[in-house]
Amino acid sequence: MGAKEEILNKIQILVTNHFSDPQEAFNFFDENGDGKLKKSEVVALLKQAEISGFIRGMVANKLIEGYDTSGDELIDWEEFKAAIAKIKVA
Image (cartoon, rainbow, N blue to C red):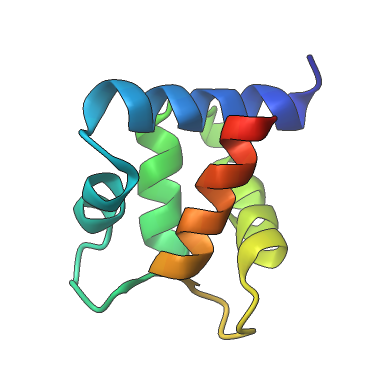
C-alpha cells in the first residue's frame, strides 16, 4: 500500500469508526460552522486520523488541491462527499 492509499485508509477508518456518517464528520471538523473546511480544519481531521505531524500540512495541501473543485482553497460538503466516495472505492 502506497503512502496516499494509507492516508486515505486512515481517513476512512476515522470517519467510519467515530461518526455515524460522513456528514457528521464534516460538521465536527467544520469548527466555525461556515460549511467549508479550511486548511487548519483539514489538519485537525488528519490529526484525528493519526497522520504524522511531520507530513500533516503537506497532506492537507494535497487534499485541498485534489478535491477543491470550486477553486476557493476550501473543502465544502459536496467536495468532501466526493472525496469520501473516492476513498470508499479505493
